[in-house]
Length: 269
Image 1 (tube, rainbow, N blue to C red):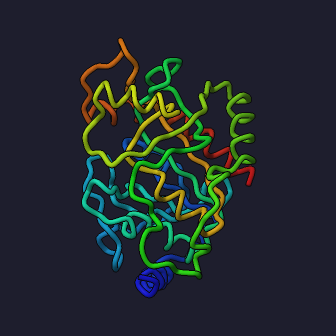
Image 2 (tube, rainbow, N blue to C red; image 1 turned 180 degrees about the vertical axis):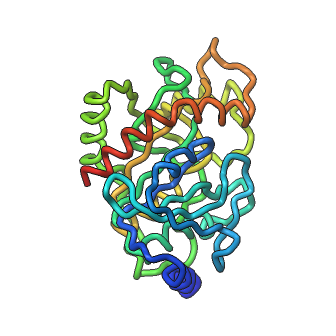
């Protein structure tokens, strides 16, 4: 796997003239941030050797290099999920490649279901911590080049970036929540009893992504910032039938606010 990662990064370097400092992973319905990238250089996933291909509607399958808020970035417009049948090494493969390309900070977004009764559909939530109910991304062969076998996760999400994001949101007059994101396998949405369980164990939102990439990044010493858009509610009395199309629609409406925060935060790095 180590050779495969390095081979893929080497290929990308022959195709792209930009050396990215910031990596961005865009979730369901959240691809609009990619449109803000200036002087883009684009690679389709299916043209990159060894790269997985996104199979989920709303995940477009493009790696976009360019400038955002004065920084060189690489953005994944479409990510990979365990529920698609990929193993964890494939899910975190792009983050490993980003590190080989020189990425020093990782920004992640997702659409998630809110289980905190104080949340409303369309809210933005800064992720301050997570609960991982997926297989751990570091299971299997250990590659010392990427960090420790036993990774400290006491600060999975950068306290410094969280503090700055809250100040930026206040300056922009954008209301933000903050809380704990729980990652499950999916692809089913949760039952009412599952929503209740997630709230009991300390969740504020629940989704099907983000955590594997963050674990891999933290092993490699890359600071992470992540934000959820609350696209549905798993709160008693507010639970309604939900579809993937509904999730996409809500996410696309709220992403402009998220984009403003991301851009300012990246500018301040």
